[in-house]
Image (tube, rainbow, N blue to C red; front, top):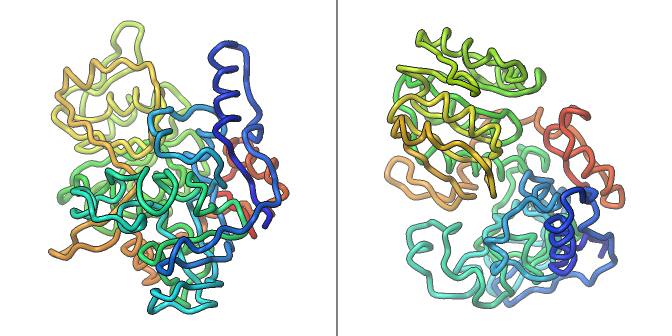
Length: 402
C-alpha cells in the first residue's frame, strides 16, 4: 500500500540537530517519507481492516513534524509508524469474533489504543471510561502506541489501510458524508474539554484561537450550555466563521488593544503592568478555553480569566517559557483536556466520539465549512505546507484523500 512513514531514528536525528544548532530549521515534510509498505494485518479475530477514505492532518501531527512535540510520551510510540489519527473509511475485512459489522460499511475510527484494544484486563482509568489515561499503552496484543498513527501495527490515516479493534469502530450514518464524519474526531476532543467544566447559564466563556479545535469548542458549548461566548483569533476569516457558528462576540488579536476592548465589552477595568501586555482587573471570563497551546496564547488566556475562574487547555503545550504570575495571583483553576474517552450525559456514560458523531448526524451542529483543502497522498509536501501555514493559505482542516 502507499503510505507516509515516520521513524524514531529520523525524529531523534532532527531533534539532535535542532538542539545543537540554534539556526537549524527542518522542512515540514523532512521527517516523513512516501513509501510502498505492506498492508497491516488483523491482529486477531476481534479486529477489523479498513480502507482509508480520508486521513486528517491535526495540529498535533504538525507539532511532531516540526520537532516541537515533547518526548514525554515516546515510551508509548512505536519506532516505525504511519501517521494520522483522524480516520474514516470502508471495511474490507472482519475477524471471526466481530459482530454487527459488515464488509463495505462506512466507519469512523476512535484512535485511542487502550486496554480493551490491547486485549488486557481494564486498568483503573479504562474502568472509568478515561481511555486516554490508560496505564498500558506499551502492553498487550500490539506494539507501543497511545493512539493510531503512532503504533506500527495498526497503520494510520496517512496510509491506504488501517486495522482497528472492534471496540474502536463506529458506523457512519448514511445521512452524512465522510467529510463531516471526520470532524467528529476534533469535535469529540472539544466535547471532552467542555465537560471538564460545563458553563452555567449566562456565564462568560472566551475561546482563544478559532482553528478547528476552537470552532468545535464553540459547537460543543452551544450544544451543552447557554453561556455567552467570546471568540478570539488572529485571522478575520476564522472569527467570521466563529460568529457564524454561534459566538456572541468576536475580537481580532493581531492588535495590542484587543484586551482593553474586551474589558470594555465586559464592563471591567484593564491595566498595563510595566513592560507587559494589558490585563483585566476585577472581572473577566468565568472560563477560558486555550485552543492554541502556545506561550503567546496562554499569556493572553491568563489575562482574560477572572479571579478563581477556570482556564482549560485544549491546545497541547510542550516546553514553554511563560510568566505564570497571573495564575497564582488570581487563583486560577488550570485544567487540562487530553483527547477523549467517555462522558456522562443524563446519568448515562457514552463514548465521546459517538456523542460527536450523533451531534453531526442529527444536524444539531454544522461542520460543512471545516474542510478547506484535500490532497492525494503523493502530494504530501504541498498538503503539509498548506496545513502548517493556515494564514498564508487560508486553510482550516486539511485532509488526505486515499
